[in-house]
Image 1 (spheres, rainbow, N blue to C red):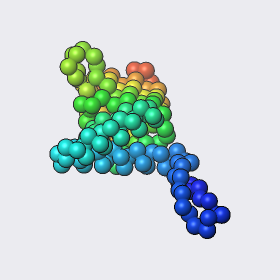
Image 2: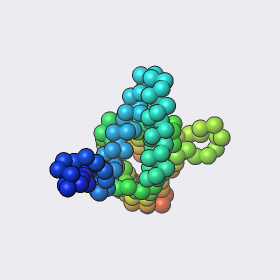
Image 3: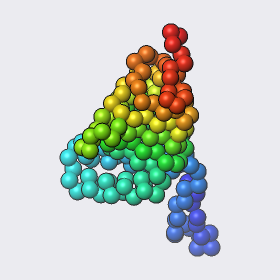
Length: 171
């Protein structure tokens, strides 16, 4: 964070905080997301509304549409950019997510549809699309621009291609 001050006054009477780095913006977004989750889960009525409004504003500004309580602890966002996650999706611990990732329903049911369940320690590469009522096992890596529409129940799999196939069978 950079601070602008006016030295001629002898002390810092006015401070303007500017976010210079992408990592600062991402860190502040993640803190805001977790604080919003806290106030929603603790059923704080006024704070919940205030944090929901702040989160919605940041989501629209940066294009990162991550619903509250969708990710477990350890969420890591690599870069700013469009990220869309369905509100009913369940994603495990220590997920690393890149730009252009979409985790969504299959569209068969207007009310929610079938959404993915993603395990712990999963890497979602840039542009990856994950649709439908599928399960992705722990430790899987989904490559760049892969379209995953079938479950991968094998741990530590590597899913690449359109449609995505596991290229790490038995290892």
